[in-house]
Length: 322
Image (cartoon, rainbow, N blue to C red):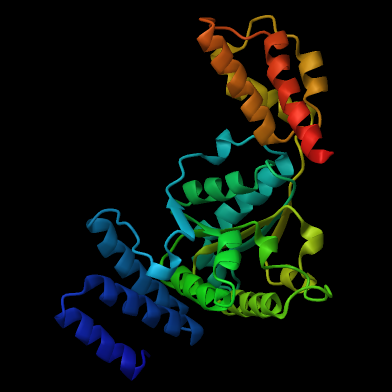
């Protein structure tokens, strides 16, 4: 059962007319019961709190002052059906959603649903979009942790900030995305790695292993070779992303151009020239072509017009690669 301190805190918050403090402590009680193995009771408490909050409508999370600017919150609107991705990735995302929705059934058999996910792949291949899609499908808010700012701005205090973030994960049900995760997930065996960052990584490993919330925790990285090997076994699933293949590029272009695509559209050259570009780069090229068409008072885009913006993106892509 709840500790004596938690019970006293609940009573104080109730009579001091502080509903947010009351909800926070009630969630701490739920977390305590979950750690004791009383999962049914823990979920009953969370359901009661969620039900009361829904009656009052959506609310804006009030972040602790030292986390403001480090956690960005949004309510994504992109469904999984709108995402152009390989069948293998789509199936894995669907499995995460399905297990989440059926988590009580799994828990009744002593099993846990997938909720700690590692996404690996080049920039612009759909990692952030996947986090947005999962939040949309599960009707949750997406909280993006700015890992690079967390480390560089608060060097020496990063572990303390991580603790606050994991407290938030426990108290505020949602999808939490650690973007540019290699900023704190670097290999601890690297000789020039500073001692502070080793302590930060050790703290993260401890926090994610001890986490018992129902929130989804997603880490995304462009550089898997930099990650410490101990990280991989802390995640329930690891998804690998690549630049789009031929059919994916065709679907993506058709989806973005929509009614702007010309009736006689030469796909062969477009597909050939767009090879090697990421989803994001192709998306930008299509939108640039649409803007050019609108400004020229045109309502259709030919393959030659799209090739102009695709080649611009190819030039940028090759310049960065070089």
